[in-house]
Length: 456
Image 1: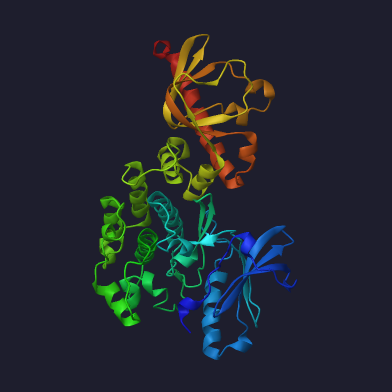
Image 2: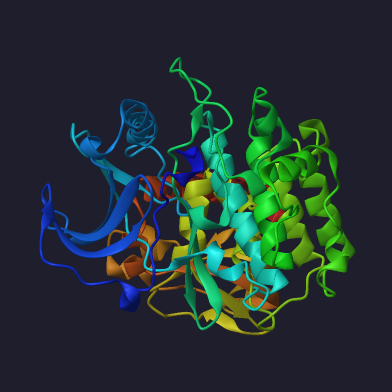
């Protein structure tokens, strides 16, 4: 049995889910078969307790396997079972539960109603370069989150990246299948040389010690495949393919797709280096290099001036207001907030208006006028209108000044309804950030009273 035959979760569009006779696995009502492979099968099911759809990945029954196969099955099941509830990240498929049934153990996972990146590896179905870079950025951030927890995925490949696509645009990206993951902090015996050959790093093939840069190589190989319609190396036999991975340079992307910019080709060539020391030092560097391709316009933009998720994430990370927010919380803000652009002279609030939103300035500047006199200038990283969120009574939510845009601005806006959709942990981070804002303003007011000539 090939280790990389251990099935990944495959989640086709809902219309493509085959129907099946009504039956159950444990407490879950099955609704259809999502995929099957040599060692397991994946079902769409209904979690009645939480009233949600889930994917159930059930291993082959022990009665159908020999002792060696059962040992391999149990090893991979244990690797994923150990991660139940541990990998909570917007770009990772969550594992909700693991049931160690002696005959056919199964995992209960987040259901993603989409397809896999394998669908976009064909020359006739390639994604735009901008979308490939965005997919790469989100995968890099997710794998960075994994690496900080001492894990190496070891089987990053197109079939293990689920995507939700709408109107030709990739809306969601989620990495799945951690059955091959290596826990560098565990004493448990690890199986070596696991993965899928076209995307395996040279050090994986050699059975050498691994770090997160092995996954970096694999992700670069996936992105290469998405761009070129073929993996970095192709050979008629397994032995020849292994030799190419260890000794040959991948063809320049320019020879395979005419619109690939030099910067993108160079980035992937670096991440595909034979020596991990020649790759990016960490996931942060790799993700930032991908994001910079869009920011510098090395990769052609689509859809006018709308900010991409990678750009929004980068903006948030640079703002003082969000300095204590981790990656997961920042992604939550990226996806939950209402991002707004304001033209010069636009009024964000007017005197006497009841506050229904607050804004955090991501770019540009606004000025506050009271009775026609400017009393404050606010720039990127500051907030305005936070009394809507903090005030205990409606009377305190009435604006006492005009807030005008004096330099075209981008703001991150929240309403009470949007705040309610944030996780409790992220709301606590907002509370702490607002306390810092209020303390600074109280200090500034105190300084103004002490030195009235400094008042604007």
